[in-house]
Amino acid sequence: MESILKHNAFQTGYLTEAGLHQFIDQALEEDIGSGDVSSLSSVPSGLIAEAELKIKEEGILAGIDLARKIFHRFDPGLEMEAFLQDGDGAEPGLIVSKYAEVPVRF
Image (cartoon, rainbow, N blue to C red):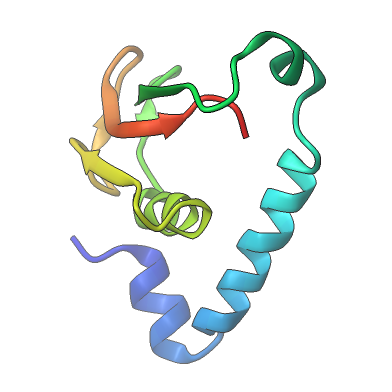
């Protein structure tokens, strides 16, 4: 199934790749900024781990293509393995995706 983002926004020219990058960059700056004070004081610099994105509530998954773009924008070398796709039914505890070698502290 084609993603809504890819099918509608990019196909119609409503949202350009440059506009999407600007939106992602602004969101990352707002969310991360200079870093989380608790993490900066308790998590060793340079610590690398694996991460999983899990479903919290029952629903229909949407935004996996956008999530891939966000993570890639944050770290172009980040490898994302997706197990579900947009439109899939989602139940609590299901793993949507895994990420290898993720920096724990930003």
